[in-house]
Image (cartoon, rainbow, N blue to C red; front, side):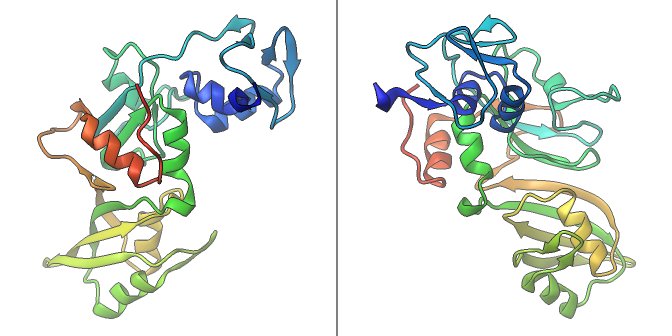
Length: 248
């Protein structure tokens, strides 16, 4: 039935093959087939309940158990499935989880803090979509004394090389002798955004940690530790994306 047909990249993400963006590249590379026919066109739909969908000749398995993992990422790990340079990835910290999960967004190599990992491709897509404005809160220890006018610059939006940032929530937590402890909340996901915002107002970041992803925080966790989200937390995070709770 037409109602069961979905875009191939969504099906691949839902089955835990990879993220939706990576799935699009698999399709463009001619590595995905439907009922024995290679598909190379984005937007192609299939029925996950009846069509034979394969990646590199291997048929997709039935939908795995959905997992929602909250990890306290330490500095010195990258947020990707693998690294060509051989650096440690966040997946090295959750090897005991049998399902293939993927980070929701990125957290810089030298930044610690909250990272969400899941094999729910639809939720990942929704959480990263700019229209939902999912907030991320950071603690940034920066060099020098940040002034009130500079705080206002961050609140108004900062011009970076890739355009103006959206207004940020920002406050000074503490002024130290030659450093300032800041709290910054953004809802965008640009590369090294908080570091670049601070540099743009003349203050290099000494230490950066993400304390919150939406309402999720690091309570009860130490660096490298993780926990499963509760069913209520999953329900609440889906509400932020205007999605009904999926049956699992």
